[in-house]
Image 1: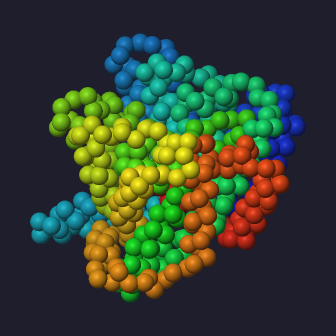
Image 2: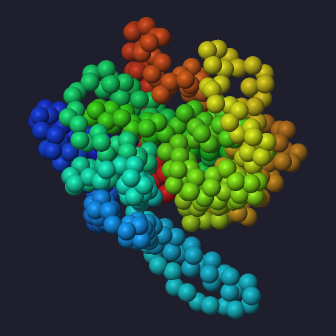
Image 3: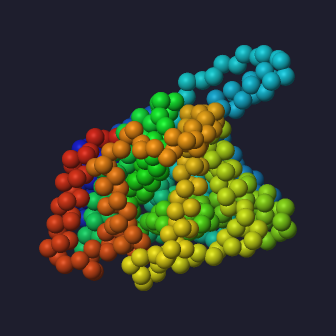
Length: 477
């Protein structure tokens, strides 16, 4: 079920009414409703894959209880690795089976030995990368004794399948979300209003900004041989706003929807295109995934505490694994490696934590140094995005080569003024709200009420005018 669909527009009010007006006095019934609604939400796409979520839920719930019984460290490690291998085994089969099979065959071909291997027609379950990491965080935290294992299966099932963030995040930690299923919730009007505000902004990002940019990005990338360097550069810019509007828009809708039901999800995007270096960008982009890899992979590997070699090794591991998490294609791996190369000088010079505060804090405009830093960071980011979007490594390399030729100085052959004006409006609103949880939170305190209502109406009309029920990009990951 898509957030930007009529189905969800009917589904959400029904669940909301049942949650607050029918089951509002019984916590277990509320949690059961959330679990059932979540399974309906996911099953709307393909009911057959509900068994995967249920199986993963049962496995990690059972292992969590088994870990609570103590015992020898060997037994506890065996339980942990059982959870890791089962969850990553399913993820690896559905997402990476054909990738490894094809590359295994290609390796033999390189040495002149042709082998024939049959690939499988595998449908990637939507959201498997997200809920797999969510359940793994529970098992690992229980193993580390950072979290008491739950004996409430309904609450745990609702946590794993929580419909607002089930298929594209944020990737929630059990330490944050699971305890919220234990406490009786009371309706908070102010929180619900701000949740609706965030939903409206998320829909605007998705259907107005992302989907509009997608049309031109697809046209330019799919026919890149026919366009000049400046048009190719504009295509990369369109894709940068497409993926940001699409993915952060989903997160905004998920977080806002959760707030309607009294739940608080963690912030997943913090205005990353205003970053002054690539380290700041990765502290602000897909925060739930970046911090997941930091806590469960980077730090266990030694983090940045060792010598130079260990710092370099761990940096490349974390970025390459992050790239591979996104998809079974060498383009994603190179995208991750390229970001590691961007990050490395900052790490080695101990400047990776230079920009921790919001840019131009308490100021309306940035200074020239900040403008240059933001522009440079955005430029190297969109060059990396070319690998993320391209069909193959060869396509990406050729696309970048074609950008940097004499035609770069000419006017683009595709120049949609309306979309560019909308992007400027979007950037302006994001800039004004860059120190908030989301851009429209700014409206509540600083804008007069009539102006607020006019702006809400504008965003709603724009969302309705542009909506076309396009899938979110991260459904494929």
